[in-house]
Structure formats: structure tokens, C-alpha cells
Image 1: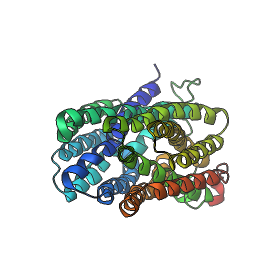
Image 2 (image 1 turned 90 degrees about the vertical axis):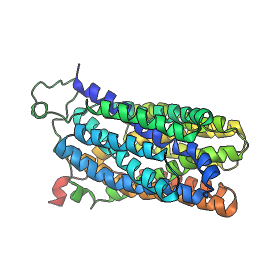
Image 3 (image 1 turned 90 degrees about the horizontal axis):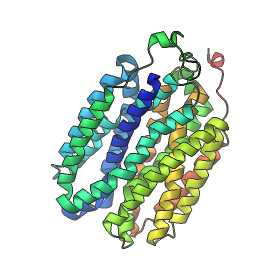
Image 4 (image 1 turned 120 degrees about the vertical axis):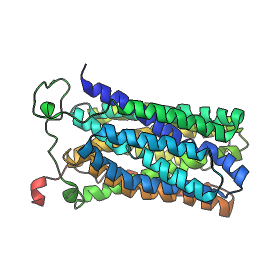
Length: 401
């Protein structure tokens, strides 16, 4: 069996754990507010700090993964991630929330970009499809883990729930990390190659980071990432407590996240195939259109079924966007510095992920409603749609010499 498929499987499992546990934060939002009396702005700040540090560390983890190999980097981060969730079970003060979730969990999540960068190394064809399989783990985690966490909270209380999450996270991420490796040199040189798979024998093709940041395409990439992550994290952090505010029981409110995760898997695979058949630009435009329309639908939605319908549409769009960024970077800039370019774009986008939930929380604390926050998210989604029309093919590297 071609080892690239093992890479895809292991990366998908790690994505399931990393993002499934991260998106549980919205489920713990209510218990934190109830026990400690924190405002939504303060509680959201921990998520904001997490995304800022996560974005910065993604650049370093991508570089370290290229130098030391993904196995050691992922193993270390898996240990830190499990440790971070163990500390969350001991939480008593605000500064601890920011340190444990904002710093330690962010360190543990930072292999996200290196995991995505492994796919373009091992595959030159069907990148969208393979990337969709890896990121389907993310959708599966979002679909499965939050409802489990919600059930654990109702049965054992939230501290015990975080202990279970810590143990499972540590075991699964460290075990899966042992199967990860970069493309061996003998395969890069064409030996033992399998043309049907399409090995990445042109890994040095494309622009460097220094060349890429001087292009308009990189600025558009950052804008796309910013609008996407602002909307995504704002919704995933606040949607459960918003649903509870509409008199929906907590366990059923957690289904909003599950539906986002389930629809995300479908969106990843559908849009990944559309990108392979047509182009990343078309698939990305469709995804941004659907996200904008779903957010417009959310503004007047108050019933349980309307929130579930929003979750399905939003999750489908989210999955489509998530799967397209890695192959889009390869298409725009090549694979020479793929991981670092992708991580740098995500770092700029993480600013949106950081301020999004804080803005949403502040708006609710001030107005008692998320309506204005949802309007802002819809506007940013349509801004992302407009940006997709400006994307062009990869600039020629010789123009930067």
C-alpha cells in the first residue's frame, strides 16, 4: 500500500481529536459562566488568545516539521495538548483559563498546518480529495466530541469531562503521531515512484515566502483567511449558548455544533471534488456564498429547527472553505514553501479568529443580543466572496529574481 494513504489516515485522526476537543469550548461556556460568574466577553477572550498563539505557533511548527520531521513535532504537541486539557479540569481563576486554554492548548493544536502540508508532499494529483479526507477528521470531531462532552458534563460535571478529554487526547494524538513522516528523498528523486499516485517530485517548484508576500494574491489569501476565521470562531464559540438563550435545552443546543461538524464533512468532500474537477476559485466562491446566506438566515432565526438548518448550511460552507486553502496555496504559490506560506496566511487570519468571538461577546454583553454580531459576520462572508473573483493563477517566480 502506498504510504501516502497512511499519512492521510493518521492526519485525519489527529484532526478529529485536535478540533473536536477545541470546539468543546462552546459547550463548557455555560458551566464556566454559571460557576465563576464571568461575562461572555471575558470567557471569549481565552478563545481569542488561543487563536492568536495558535496562529503564531503554526508558522514555527511548520518550519520545525520541515527541519526535524513531523513525527517528533506532533508527539511533543500531543503531550502538551493533553496536559493543557488536564489543567482545564483544575480551573479556578480567570488567569488560569487564559493560560491553560489560551496558551497550552494552543501549543498542542499548532501541528494543524504541518498536517495539511503533508498532503501536497505525498500527492500531486487528487490533492483536493486527499485534503478533504484529512479535514473530514475535523468535521467528524466537531460532530462527535461536543455532544459527548455535553453528556459527560450532565452526568459527571464539567471537571470530570475535561479529565476524560485530556486522557483520550494524550493517548490518541501521541499514538497517531508515530505514523507521520515527510516524503523520503528516494521518492523525491523518482525512485520507487508510482505514477498513478502522482508523487510530489517537484517539491522545490514555486515561490518562497519572501516572494509570495510581495504578491497581491498573498494579500487576498490573508483577507480570505481573516473573513473565514472571524465568522467560524465567532459562531462555534457562541452558537451553543445562543441556542440555550432561545430556550433550547443544553444537550439539544450542543447538536448545533454536531450538525456543523457533520455538514462540514460533506462540504469538504463535495467541494474538494469540485475543486479537482473545475478550480479552487469556483469552489471557494460557492462556499463563501453559502456561508453568507446562512448567516443572513441566522439573524432572524429563533426556533430550534431554524438553528439546525443554519448549522447544516454553515457547516457545509465551512467544510468547503477549510479543505480548499491548502490546495489553493499550492495552486497560487507552488509547493516550494507551501507550509510556511499557508501558516503565514493563517496567522494573519487568526487575527479574525481572535477578535471575532470577543466582538460577539461584547456585543451581547452590551445589547443583550447577537444580532449585530451576526450581521458583521455575514458582511465579512460576502467580502470573502468578492475576494475570490480577484484570485489569479500563480505568478512566475522569475519575476522576483
